[in-house]
Image 1: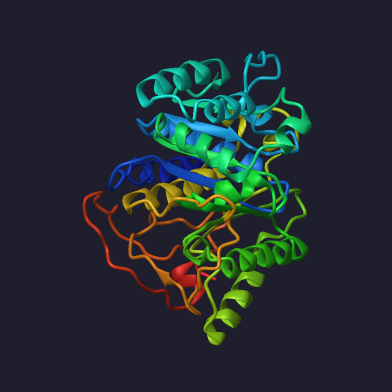
Image 2: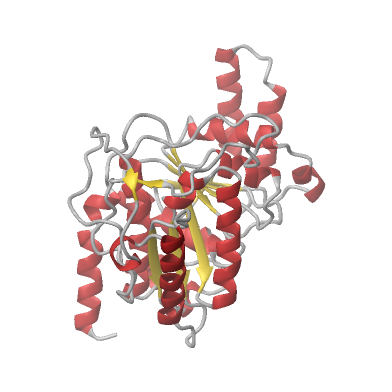
Length: 368
């Protein structure tokens, strides 16, 4: 990368600052759930949380709720860091055991149980809770309601939760995290097979009543090797968006970000932000800005009923309503080939914007 390109990327990151710091509308934490059958999801969530923690004043918590020994901790923390003495499963057990304890005493007990389970990352405002030391049978025994109670507790103590879940669509953690999400982050690798899997998963969410999340989701398409063709992936998205638009079907995303290949992102171990190429930093900053732009809207989460998970029978309209809350200008990914839904000044936190149907070609709206 030339010095001119380097300066351009860094200037573009600076321009995103107002969006990254967009104040939240209403009260309560915002919950970001990463949902994808693809291997890039953990790295994407880790970098988005890193950007938000560095740019905002909110306390940010990464929650590794992957029942298959997730890698969020490995992506955010040095390999030499020691495991905390407790984890997410310990917190779930404590919350469950304290369900009949009076409120003031319960708050103190929960706070005492949470502190030994938290881990500090290199980002000052970003902490982590995981199940790295839990036994598989312990994790498998948790219910949707137990995960939801633990997520609610964490949301009462942090401003932003980023929840990493496994690839199983029926896992208890997945149902709880999707059911209470305010924003859906959907990463996938830049190839046709990966896209088909993601589209099927998105369609499943729509069928089970989560069309509002899907229509406002942020897709992050990552080049996993130097030969990956982001332009081909974008053309496939364009074709999909056009077909669905003509058929009057539910949009499957709101904003698309493309991330170039970067060896420093690696497939294992800690990702060090300073080692990423400027264009990669820009792409992840754009993804974080797209997520932060949604903070200017009231939370979309609703109480999750035990046993419901995402398998709700709520009917979904044929065409979902989009939102007028504008994503950051220039959310085009490092390749500059996919644009966002709107451009304009960051929305004011206090201003509620009416929703309207999403329309127009993908190049103008970034919606599938």
